[in-house]
Amino acid sequence: MTTEDQTKTVKVHIFGSEYGIKGDVDPDHIGKVARYVDSKMREITDNLSIASSARVAILAAINIADELYQERELRQRLLLEIEGKLNGLSETLTRTIQDEEGQPQSESNTDED
Image (cartoon, rainbow, N blue to C red; front, side, top):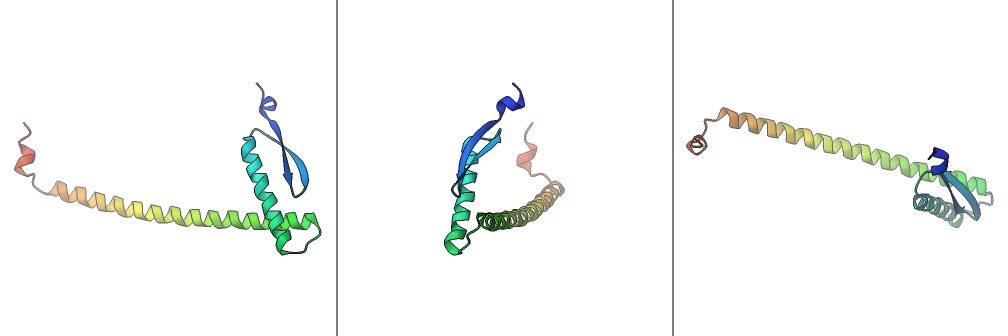
């Protein structure tokens, strides 16, 4: 089976127009993305009086790109926070292990023969 055989065309409706989206992605996913873009464009026209669908599409693209960048920044901050916590836990664990290794073994640990 070739790659061309795997690609499907999914018809979606965005802002009153039908588009054929071709790809090997899940059609349900493409539909969700298209509905999201459509909702963003309609949200813009509900709040602003813009006649040009091209301008609406550009504003929607800017809004969606802004959301993407905000999510990426949040993800990066969370990753740094998690990394810091993991480093702190690792240091604590290392110190605890080193402290335990420096302690003489109790009698209950030596009776394993």
